[in-house]
Length: 79
Image (tube, rainbow, N blue to C red):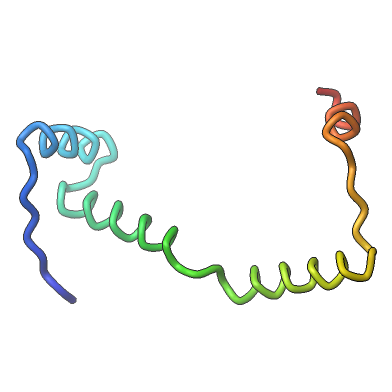
């Protein structure tokens, strides 16, 4: 594990503490949670997702993918 020091404004700390308390977390736990969730968003897509997209692109190249207009999708879903 790596330790880092953060320098944050008191108003920011107060807002973060309030949200941590609302979620029944310590401030440290809440900040770790936020950092982990953000890091997950920055990761490359999973192998499963890449495989699925590769398959979809191959189907698209072969003309096996059918597209619907926005109007058709909305009508089909009662929107």
